[in-house]
Image 1 (tube, helix red, strand yellow):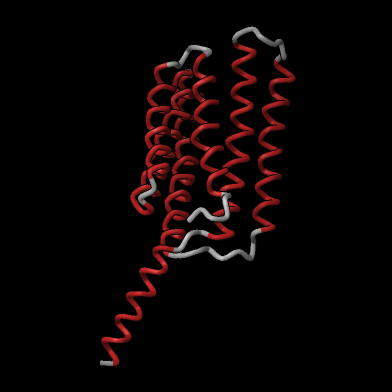
Image 2 (image 1 turned 180 degrees about the horizontal axis):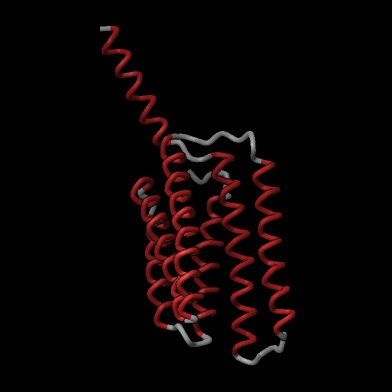
Length: 203
């Protein structure tokens, strides 16, 4: 009887852990995702404005602007991670999601080396422009895992959005529309989900 009671207790604890949200850890992750989506989305839209001839920035300013975006993001991420260093990791699902996105991030770095080295060797810009397409597809896969675990409709929408954005991005290589598609995807499927994740009541 005691063994059965202990088994039941363990099962209930496991189910409760599955239902847990990420808590403060999830909100911190949401803040990082929101910042990344807004900053890099802004960079894409500024680049699009220049390509369409709406503004004249010059190569030096463009390079400094792109560097500033990355520096700003790294500083924000460091600050957010430092503030949330003692936050709970959440339940089983929260940890599984963290693992999925961490795996996608690691694969993204590997692909950066792959696409970057081949593009340099072949002196082919198109090869390099395929890299963001692959990154978007990986993001879609990570969000698909989130949808399968949490069964929230908006997570499925985000996953599908990333997949479609990857296809749309590949179709616009060589066109100024490429940066518009990239910027829209970053805002809609990175910044907006980040804002949703920051909501205290979000599981």
